[in-house]
Image (cartoon, rainbow, N blue to C red; front, top):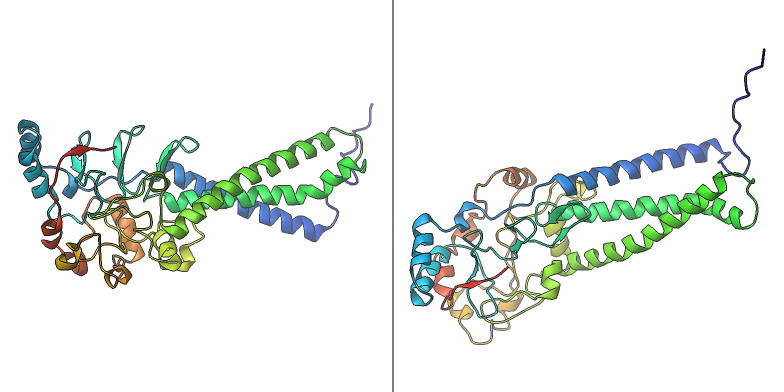
Length: 336
């Protein structure tokens, strides 16, 4: 009768020998992996937010728009639809941004995704790696996904580095494990390089309060184009994405400020006299930034699941009526 085979022994030089080092690496690995999977899941399965019903044309307005020829009649229809909406950006010709596929007036920073075939609030891009649009509702999750993916890959490369060095110095036993070590290090290192460039680019976008689409086409306001029109300074730009409560910054939970339909800007002034000055605003009004829509975290989360209008704070209500007065002559122009 054959004796049972001895249990496999850990090969010297291939595994860690210090118990404390093993515990630390094991705990850190699972923390990084959990955060990576959590943020990746949230990026994929968080539905992009669409413009609320206030931006959709009514049935009568859609009929009027289709019936009337292009010209002043259609301008009147769009003027009525947009007069009470908090929109400040325009098309290249100065027209209200209108989507003829969704039949709505586009909110600021909203774009129509040809893949999803619907308008997405604060659309950044459609990402094939997550099979979802990256926009207002999941941009924070996408950033955390990039961050934790990078940290995860760096952790793998760092813990594998000493064994990778032993591989090239012939310090490892001649087993198949050494080829696994080489492959693991190269894969983690290459992903770290690509992720670091992508994550650094999106960190720059957050610091400037821009989206990927706005980098390629700067937003056009009532009087001029300004690539930094939504930038309020590094601190406010960061809080607009991650929120005011720092305890939520590193967790894949929704904490972004605002409702995705209206955004504070350093260019738009609510005074109709100043807004009508040629060439934009005067020197004093450019430094007067609008305040964020004051909303606690729980209200932002509830709006993510409902279509209730959420820009009707006191400060925004005060500007209703003035927005419509400041609109230039409107012409309908389709824009995607």
